[in-house]
Amino acid sequence: MFHRVQTKEEHFVFEQFWGDFCEERKIQFIERNLQPERFLLIGAENRYIGTVECAKYEHPHESNSEYFYPFSTHPTIIKERKWKRIYEIGKFSIERQFRGQGYFKRLVVILFIHALETKATAYITVVTKRMYMYLRFLGFQMHTLDKEFKINEFVIGVPIMIDAYEGIKHLYSIKEIRDVIKMNAHAMQLLRGNDNKVMLT
Image (cartoon, rainbow, N blue to C red):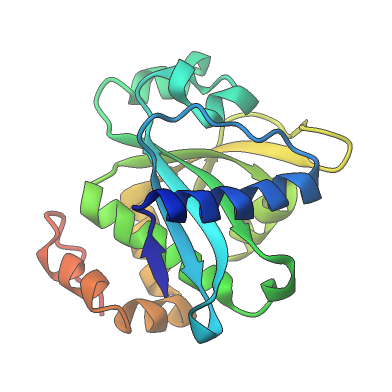
C-alpha cells in the first residue's frame, strides 16, 4: 500500500515524483522542512505512484505550507499552537495515469495511520480548490482559514485546518476507506490501542 521513505535513494525517488508534479502544475518546489516524514504510495506490481509528506508544524521558517500561506499569523493557528500538536500535510500527489482509480483512499489511509501514531490533534495544509471541493463532497469537516487565492495561473489554493480526531472518525465512517484500513494490520493495531478509544464499528 505504501512505503516509508528512509534511504537516500528513496528520498531521491520521492523528490523526482514531487518534482514532476510541480512541473505539471507549475508550482514552486519548496524544501524547508528539516525532518519531514515521507511516504511513497505503492500501486500494482509494487510500483511507486504517489507521494505524501507530514511534518510537525513548529517553526514557520521551516514550514513548506507557510511559503504558500501565512498560517503563523492566523488567529486560529496562533490559538491552536499553544496547546495542540499540529502537523502539516504536503507533497500530496498521484501520478497522472493513476488518478481516478481509487488510489486516493490509500493516500488518506497513510494520514489516518500518521494521526494515530503521532497523536496529532490538527493538520494544516493548502489544498487545490479541486481537492477542497472533493473533500467537502466526502463530508470532511474542515476549518477554512481564508478565502481561496491564486497560487499561479493554473492553480487555486485554499488554506485549511482539519481536526485530527474528527478526521479519523470520518475516514472510518466511509465504507470504501474503512475497507482499506481493515486490510492494514498496523492501522487496526493502532486503532485498538489509541488513547481516545476511537474503536469504530
